[in-house]
Image (cartoon, rainbow, N blue to C red):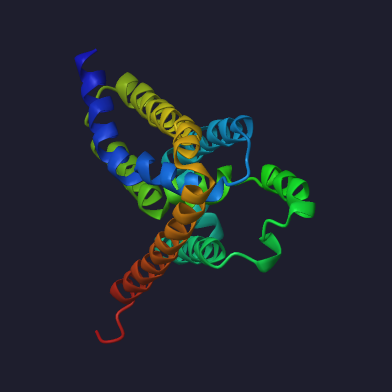
Length: 222
């Protein structure tokens, strides 16, 4: 049992800084304007489920999946960066058609409620992004080669770690509705612009990291 606790503790220590549930809450605050509390809870639940699935697939089948499709970590970083950057610019410079005219307000709210933000960008790449996926793939390869724990621990510990990370994320995201009520509409609008800027910066940084990976892996000068 002590060995299991040690393995789970190590897994949480590695994953939580990378997944960073607090940053996911901030992104959700910026993207969930117009959503009801019920819809936010639904998005939070779906995001937690998606994160668990992504981490499990990355750990158990990541190398095989990326090998089949010829995807590299650098490609994953660049693709994730483009997606995050696009969403960030949309938040920073909202479409004029999204202006809150009274006669279209109910229709806008319905459109916001139907929008699904649980998978992209909350689950991927904000929470389970390229860094998390790369860590899980590398950890799976290391555990397979070195076998640092008992066989039953190596089977049980990853699932427990993924469940705990997903539960922690869910609890954090559930607090978004309370934060939004405290901020009010004007506060949410301002936060949305701020998070749009930060998302755009994150997207650019993802792309930069991907390009640097390519330069490091395929140097022009030998």
